[in-house]
Image (cartoon, rainbow, N blue to C red; front, side, top):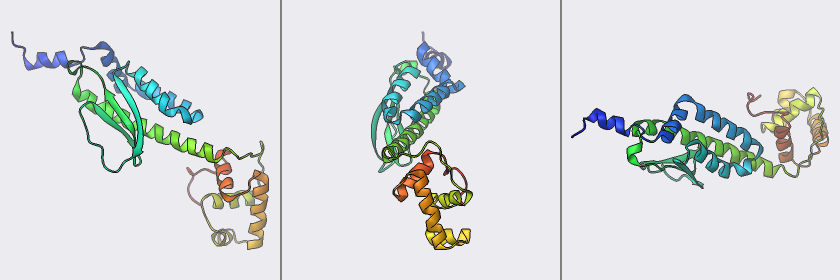
Length: 217
């Protein structure tokens, strides 16, 4: 007996219960909660981000989606293939998500709607992890004191240094002489136990003395 188009559509709308559960998690936000848990973990363990992403995606999808880690610069837009979704962010392709399920088990419309979003979120998390790992490596030699106390003027100078202002700009904005600026800067170096300009920036960032999320002064 020949089936009607609607009957065929019903058959291809997830005959696989575990795949249905995974797509439902993408629809109702449960998968996003899992990614937020992953984000918290890789914030503390950025060097494990790639392997943790592989494990998390496999668990979330119950084995139906595989994350293949292969970071490389994006020289062109990745070619789209059926069942393969590029994990990209900010000019880098970190890998691909590969949907591994029989075609008869897949509702391609829903998969095509949600898996690209999942791939983009994965790319953002890996980009964040890589930046966090870089900051960790660059700052591993730093040894800031447990308690940091700066005067308001010193903190103001630090903020301008953090944002990349040169000496003339800092003096003009604060209405101070170069000698005064040098004294403030030396006090900052001593207080933060730093020996170079980039150490100041990393320590200020790592100890939350200044944040790039605030408006530039």
